[in-house]
Length: 196
Image 1 (cartoon, rainbow, N blue to C red):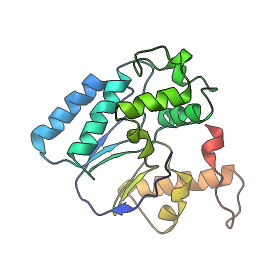
Image 2: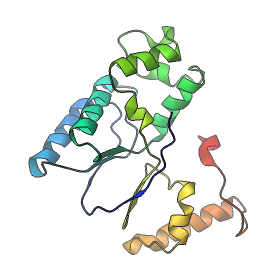
Image 3: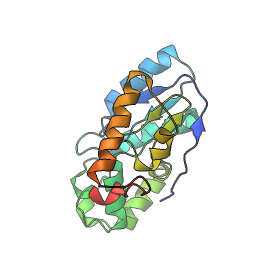
């Protein structure tokens, strides 16, 4: 999987689409509503593309098609379900997450190898959706994450970013996080991926 370095986007208008969890029909409804008012939208998906129910393959196809249609204007932030999917593939399905997902492959996922699933998703031209996921999306005025705020974004906040009335709440929350890990001012924040 690629590790995409994120840059700051200089845009003023964008649409943020919450957790989809494989609900492709609802996703199509939301996209239609957006396209009715904006013929060239900038779309940000905040992760959890896959779900245990719904039509997961169709959801990936819709997002893949949108990335082609609005080239450079569709981004998917990695959510915890997306992370579990990636980890399960790299660990040979040992976590059991992928085996709980419905409608991702026409065959029984319990009989497949990770390489078979990757090959299938590549043939369907949707695996790139996972490869191109980003940890967060940042503009000059906003930081969008799945949840919580990525710890590698600490510098973003320590450089004085204040989001209207929520800035103080975020600063307080991040200070509490630092305190809960008993870090001194000079220590780096821990890698939280091990707590997933």
